Length: 229
Image (cartoon, rainbow, N blue to C red; front, side, top):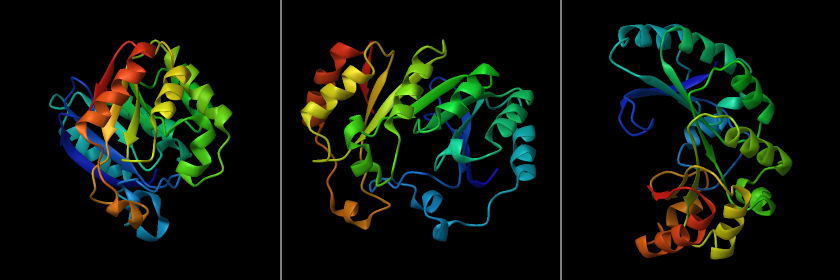
């Protein structure tokens, strides 16, 4: 598996768990606001970390870390993702997977093999706006399949949307709420101006707290809990 980075310690990436974060290289989306361009654009890839190095680190952290977060990029584009996760699980760590939901077939297999303990899926916007927001050709029926798989998995999970000022409107959040009606948790993430796939987004503003609260109020009737992060 192509590992583009390893954050050795985190208290915020896996709810209620002490974890490390494995970053995979490669993504099938090109969201302008993405804050990890070095994991998305091949020309910015650094030489990958070897799996041997990653598992040597994990071995040294047994009993100190609860879990491993696998994020990207987009982990599900890695052909050997499930093999890697299986090895992590056999090392007695819980696994949280971050995904854009574009490959439900990978999610289905991971769930069937009981390889996951927590899932976080990004929702870019209403389905009809995916081509525009992701700058990618995407079969949005697969996004819906992933939503359904996650909601019926029996695992703890969250859906989340990065909110860029002016990109999504109130009606968009109502539509997102309808898509995930009954979900246990939906998180609004404030866009932080630092890095971006598209440099034009470095001129964009973060949404105001008032705006985020308005979006929270719109989506709260559809989900069990809606948080601002």
